[in-house]
Image 1: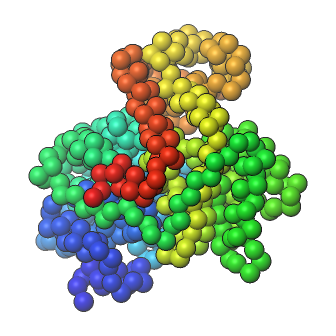
Image 2: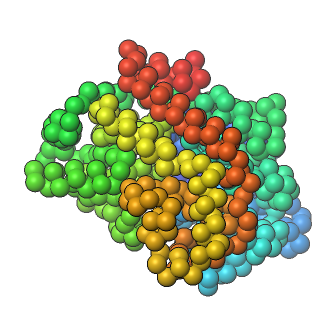
Image 3: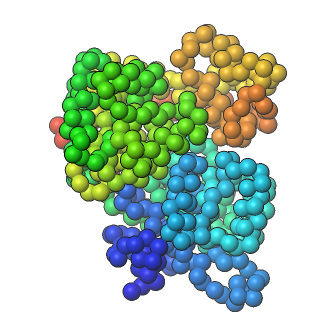
Length: 484
């Protein structure tokens, strides 16, 4: 049994690797870079978790005499909830892993910094924004970074479907930590995004071998149902529930919505029909979201109605169906979300309820998430020059001055999120404690770039319409993601 297989069995309980996990691990341990594209639930994380264990056991003389810490694997991850889930699982498996993010108190964070500096951990999860913190840079300088793993690597690319600015600094981060062996991992990346990921890492395609396992999930039944109104949408949902949520079955399911108000409307409809369910969306408090997710993961709730705030890090084997009550915003997000079904390899159903009128809602949503440069500038001006009023009166006061009292307009939240990601305001948006920490970033003033981003998102939505109309939807997905 190889060392890698030993750790696979000892910590994760598997006898054999799935293809091509063993080959990826061997490349990393040979000191070479890898871009890993695997379907959701196919074991991407093992490709850096096993090397982390192997690297931590390497004991050169410098480590033995105490002049150097054992190698650390640093994982860049986009969501703090995703980090906690992975770290909890790793710790339960006997792996010395931890995370450092804004969910920790100052005391907890300082204690973990000290433990990292001592060499207590072989795996550390952080968001890329952590590199803004001087205390983190001081600690990480005391460790030998043996491997940098960039999870959800599509976030690196300006073409990716979950772009965030600090991911575009990964080449800078690599230089700070000594340009270690680097692995980028994602479930979804078009050919353009693949090339951009490699470039943003400061590497060449020759240096970074791509491992593409393909994207087919043959156990998933892909269906599209044409819907004309809310009543038909409800009927279609009920038909899915009747197939999978019976007393003699044990599976569960997710219904995705674009807007919270639509989710709540259908929650009321299902309550009237006696359908037990929970609701998950971004307006809930963090502890409420955690409780709802835990209930779903542990089988206490079999059905969740959710916005796309729910799902990343949800590794539940027996999800029997994923219903999209509204058209998603892109093929990438659609594929990620249906990928949560059928991870046990058994049949599962993925149903997209297509109402042409929902395209208007999605187009409006795209407009909200792509405010133009002029709106970004006006928002920043208010933050910088009306700070006291915003602290006192909050988001509604700010939105009234920027959105002509259109209460569903979410452009302000988008700009606040962008400013947060660029480090202009604090990581956790609490307007009662608002402080403007820097100037408006140049990319938000570039109207051509803002317009190009809007156009890209509109083209992504059009691809979804083409998917709906396609005679061979599996082939359409393969073509879209550039898989033969």
